[in-house]
Image (tube, rainbow, N blue to C red; front, side, top):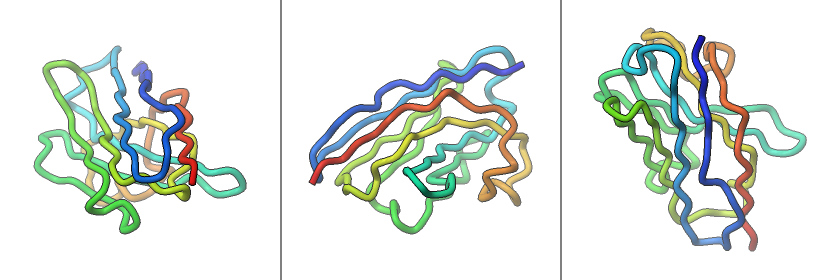
Length: 125
């Protein structure tokens, strides 16, 4: 079993920054593709960013490109999401999630096998 624990959410003004962290335990962290997903009130959960096991491949949804950066430290079993130039539309519960090595389906919410409990990010205008 894999356990994921997010931290770093909070309230920030538009244009500000936050850094989310996700500590992973229970299995070999480097075996998993890691993703950050979010769900805003009344909306479906969506992929925000993902990074491959080696870290060589990354994916970002268009709306966060140039503002968000996903990184991972395999030695610390941790994945991060640096969020800059935050906008009110970024307000959501952010989830850290893990899946197997197949990169073809990392865009799909349903492909993720393990999830954290979520952390709230609120961006005020």
